[in-house]
Amino acid sequence: MKRRAQMMHLRKGVEIYSDRSGLDRKAGAAAVMFKRGQGAKTLRYSLGELTDHTVYEAEAVGVVLALHMLSFKRDVRWATIHLDNKAVLGVLMACRSRPAQKIIDKIISQMEDIWHNATDPAFQLEIG
Image 1 (cartoon, one colour):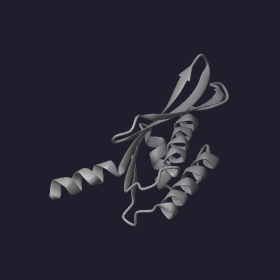
Image 2 (image 1 turned 135 degrees about the vertical axis):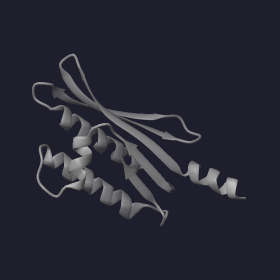
Image 3 (image 1 turned 90 degrees about the vertical axis):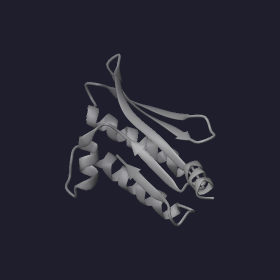
Image 4 (image 1 turned 135 degrees about the horizontal axis):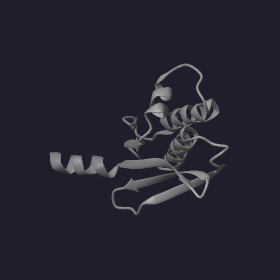
């Protein structure tokens, strides 16, 4: 019975990976979501020229994309968003203004919306 409960818990979760890219002098971001038993879903966004946008901005937009994808999932008990930029993680924990603050504010707003709209009272969201 315990094994079945563990398997049910795994099925109710999603893993999302976000990252940025710089290719052909363009800055971009992407998020890929995996849910057990379903195919991967991808969302991409082009920010524009690398001369106009930073890696930090692109990483933050990747988190916005990940949270956007998560906001459409129902019956999710847990979600983990993976990213590889410590600066973005750090600013999510800080209470002071940083570069790309509008993007960070959007991330926080999306996290609050997802939290309030979660159908499972034990819903967990981890970004790391």
